[in-house]
Structures are given as structure tokens and as C-alpha cells.
Amino acid sequence: MSTLPLLLAAVLATNGVNKAESLARITSDTTYYDRKEGIAVFKGHVHVDDSDYQMHARRAIVFMTPSNTLSRIAATGAVALTNGTKRAYGEKVTYHRDNGLIVLHGAEGAPALVLEESPEGDRSVRGRKIRFWINREQVEVVEADLSAPKPAGKKGGFSLPGMGK
Image (cartoon, rainbow, N blue to C red; front, side, top):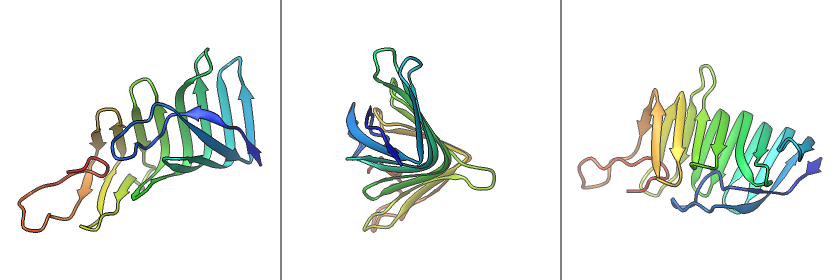
């Protein structure tokens, strides 16, 4: 098992707060790193352990800028992300540091899924593609299927996981 610590942006923000950078530990069966090309490829049992989130995938590629800072992350193969009471699942996820965009893709017959546990009831978002802008707390869902408990004694009041109400 290889380990390569890198500066990574938090893929899932805590309570809507984006931490620009945090130290994460990435483990995988094999790792390939090319500083000149600015990429690190992690294959097999990829696990990212960050103070804000955990990620599991079959493969992840980290793209770096010429100054060796994070540019983009792409993970594929049974991707699972957790952050406290929030969980996300999909076949592929990408994170673009420049605009804080996370894109979660589902697989054929298995939509991307975001779940948030709450004492008031669990909320979920399913879709072919779910796009999060963590800096703006915005979400876009393609082929959306949303569920949330109705607040007791209130009319309406739907909020997406991670977006609060």
C-alpha cells in the first residue's frame, strides 16, 4: 500500500464553509506521481482521509498546477464520500478548485445519491448528475428525485442536503 500526502481542497465543505486547503492523506494499492506533468494517479482501494471528509474509490487522479498546488481531482469506480451526517455515492466525482465545483455522476441504472441524516428526518437527492458549488452553496441536479421530511407545523420548507434551511 502506498501513501502520498498532498494539499487537497475539502471535497465536501462542513456546514457550507469552504476551507481553501487542508492536509489530506491518500492511500491506495499503487500510486504514480509525475511532478513534471503535475499528476498523481492512485489505483486500487483508494482512500482519502481528510479532517472534513472521507472518500473511497477504485481510482483517483490529482491534477496539480505548475506551482504544485491542487487544480482538479477526478475519482472513479464506486465513489463514496462522507462528511459528518452527509454521504454521497456515485460512479464518478470531479472537483474543480478554481470555482469550487463538485460534479457527482451516477452510473447506468444507478443515479448519483446524496443523503443527509437529521433528527427531523433524512433528506436525499438523486440524479444522473449532481453539481455542487461549495463556495456559493448552490446545487443543480439533472433528472432530479428529491425527498425531505415536511417540517412539523410548517407549510413547504424544502432544503437540499448541505444547504440548510
